[in-house]
Length: 425
Image (cartoon, rainbow, N blue to C red; front, side, top):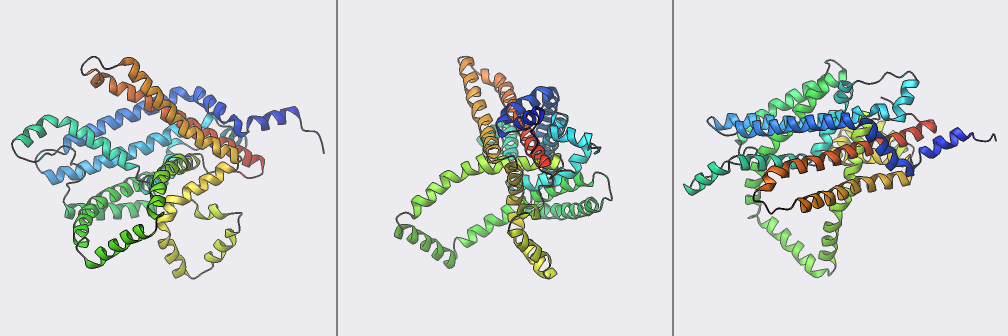
């Protein structure tokens, strides 16, 4: 066997899992300006949309205003998707994998192409893991703060308050009507996207996917409340609740076990699943189709099972697809991202998750330290300083996270390329 050249040895060492922190910082140093500009533009647009949604949700023709409010909220969520894709795309030039593709003659994908391809799956992931809840909470906070004087006067007069209700008081019939229209448009643009009929159809399909989900959820909440009141009085439901309580009392460890699971599970989601979900998005932007269900089992024993399933009757395939739809939306993307991460070795996966959590822990402590140094002796000082401090913290967290995602993909994809497997668009 010929001796390995020193250059090759250095190249392999530079792609080890241990190089992930330095590679992350290297990408940040090379692309910091573009990342800051993308983040700042996104926050400006987000703030303007928040204020617009709050402004339009109050006044005459309340139901019409609430329809528009939900429309603007959909734009708020879509803005988050666009900014994340834009930030990931802006660091492409610093990745070894992308440079290798360029040297191989592969055309570099445009920002619009990555956006058109990635946002639809991004929206599915966003909804499957309820990431939009944070956006809704922020809107409620903004709307409540902007109407605090009017609502205080209204409550003193014995009337109801409107602040923070713009996303939850839309009439059920109106919600269903708009949801049907959004669904039809989503299906139309989705068909155009699959068949390559209209440029940008993927982005429009994403928008109407989000709109359909939000208008539908508004109607479902109203139905769920009425149905919950009805169910609470049914004999069968009451009996099942009594059985569950009796089982908890009969088995000594039952309640302790589920309490322990309830304490640990959120940390598993935040420390493992959520990082892999965002790695999925990075993979999509850089050309690896991590939403492919078959890719999860490719190369394993389950690959033969999947092959047999593809040969089954069409009705069987349709039934299985519908039965596993919720599982696929939540778990297939992270599972694909996990397979991508472990291509760089188990250490890469561990360091990636550790880095993802570490960025948030360190910035939280730094934020607390800055707030302690500034102090709060002066009245209302944080009305002026709270926003800028939070902006800087979020800027650091998101830019470093984007660089970490890009570095993890770069190491895993480059090592896959060295092994003869390429991840291309």
